Image (tube, rainbow, N blue to C red; front, side):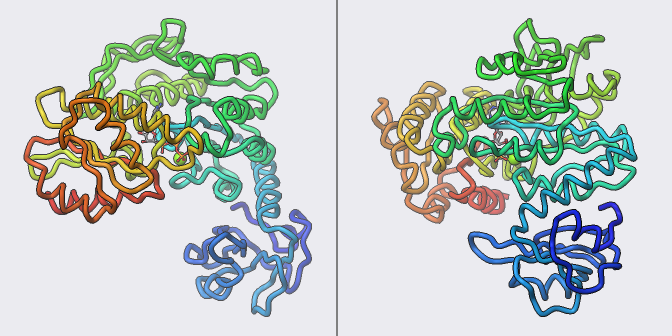
Length: 464
Ligand SMILES: Nc1ncnc2c1ncn2[C@@H]1O[C@H](COP(=O)(O)OP(=O)(O)OP(=O)(O)O)[C@@H](O)[C@H]1O
Ligand SMILES: [Mg+2]
């Protein structure tokens, strides 16, 4: 963070200062005491599971120079008492962003969409990193805590701030753009992720539109020309729209896409020319859209084609547990079990079928898609149909929350043992270790809460 005194921070967050306000903070700001470093500022945030106030002494042991709390504590370091630490975090982030903007040359890029935010964020960060000092979130830090924590990593010489803007309801993105209005916006796609929480896809459209409304006035926005739910967002733009997609109407376009286990090759068309062959290591045709979105950011930042292509090719995987490919013991295991929505399930299954290419056995190990509410049942039925249509060799369904997928797949026709159901990941593991053979391609996917990513890790270990 930029250097601020504890008194200045107390003023910014409107808190009551207890102790020595002259101390300077310039290091890490976090809600996780384990990540504290000497000179840092610890926010004691109450959570659903535990309460940051219980970790204050740990934070101080790790070097916290001051703490922000919701109730006064008996501690050795200065403390700022506020009514709500999350609001205080936002207030501090807003002030820091404004100060860096004022004194520097900061460009903020905000990315939203139902799927692909983290992947695109990593691609954009790789690109911006080639242009200048860049701050980007770790992992999926995209909510009212993670986004401000990311912003608080800014220093006076930061040139690019890449933000992943997540939402599971109306107003969530506005809350973030009110802290830091992006200079460039990206809307990737609108799908059924978290549809249960949103209360339907129309609400998701409204929520994702908040990014377009929340940009700096006149700022450009990058929109998915292939997604009929995204296209109308152009009407909300106050600046130019740059379209990406497969449709000829798109300015940043991909064509001649070839998916293989070694990655995806495609031709990239940009306003200033064409790259005949981009060798993109991130597996799956769906990730080409994320690459196009990142390339569009490059176009708006004035990059030449070789810089854009170089950045895209430098990224080797989307992120841990996103289409993470392992070749072990003659098999291919794709661990995509960081999260799952109907769209990302469908995309992963299509990739599985493409990679198997009817020459290899394709095995889909699938767990629950959470947060779908009333959409859960019908979406499992749809996926079952897709599985049959894609001719997936073996379906392995894990956990009660996904049982309907198994039943629907069996009901879809000639499924004689081709769908197996297991209550636990351990049981599925025992079955798979026995069933898998060299040459097989195995996809493991579920929502985070179903935890199949660990089953994927165990399989990779066992098969190696
Ligand atoms: N355009 C797309 N269409 C469908 N699935 C996609 C698309 N882009 C990425 N995915 C898949 O979505 C899943 C999540 O990817 P990623 O982590 O990048 O998304 P995210 O939007 O950051 O998710 P979260 O909301 O959990 O932070 C992965 O399985 C990935 O392969
Ligand atoms: Mg994410």
